Amino acid sequence: MEFAQLRHFVALSEVLHFGRCAQQLGIAQPHLSRSIASLEAELAVRLFDRTSRRVALTPAGKAFLTEAFEILHGQQRAINAARTAHLRERETLRIGFVSAATFQILPETIRQMRALIDVHVELMEQTTNDQIDFLQGGNIDIGLGHPPVTAGDRVAVDILRPDGYDVLFYEGHPLATDTSVSFDQIAGEDFILFPENEGPVFYNKFRDLCRKAGKEMKVPHVATRMHTIHSLVSARLGIAFAPFHTRSIHVERVVRVPLIPYPESLNLDLAAFYDRLNRKQSLKLFLKIARGL
Image (cartoon, rainbow, N blue to C red; front, top):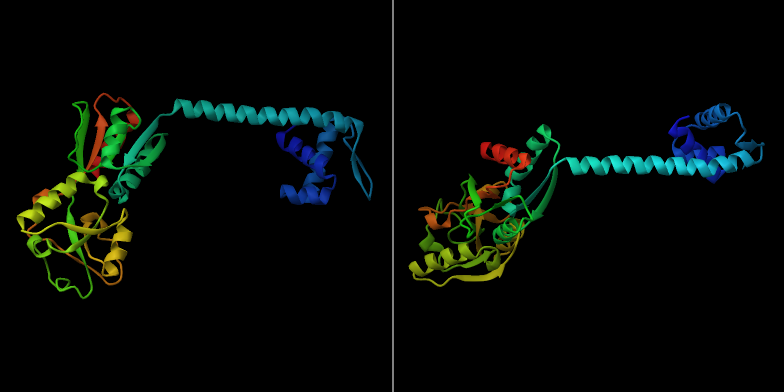
């Protein structure tokens, strides 16, 4: 007796029509008929009375139906128990990340890691500061964000990718045709940036650079995603900074110009933050792969 035969029997007992039942099961009607006939032969009883007009359960069929339900439910419970035990056995790697990590490093590292080990991955998009809070609270295993950070000695910081910014201009801006621009040239412009609470360290550095250039920092518009920032620049609402790793983004009427000389204080490194005492094998492998990208 096979589980498939039991499923066929239960389905037919509900529909009581071979043609409609076969259609619901996605099998040919002759296959369903053979399956039921084989089950009846094995049990040595008739489960259905069949005529040209109707199909009905026999008393033996009704009795068998109750037990068939129990067997199939037991099968599903066994499957669920096995899967639950498997999930308990394999490690879970909890990762916090900023959007910059989704450009190559995060997806490629996960892809290579899963090709080597069976690991359950949980992802949470978070600001860098939230990552440090979650890491120190034991709620994530690793964070991918932007240093510098304020954390205890147990938090390790590994630089994975040095990065910085270009300047985004809208077509028609007086500086849009230049091969490069200096910070002094753009310090007095209206900027479109991410919210200050998502990068307070950057804002402080940007504000200081503007003051040194004799200008006041002006950020009339904020947006959380680079595609939105590009669109606002395209609408001539201001200019913006765009990380090097987003150079693959192209939006009509938006021009990207290098910032030369580059202010060192605007470096945008991507780093991994993790607890030095975390012994998870998946964490060690994740770091090994990410460092090599």
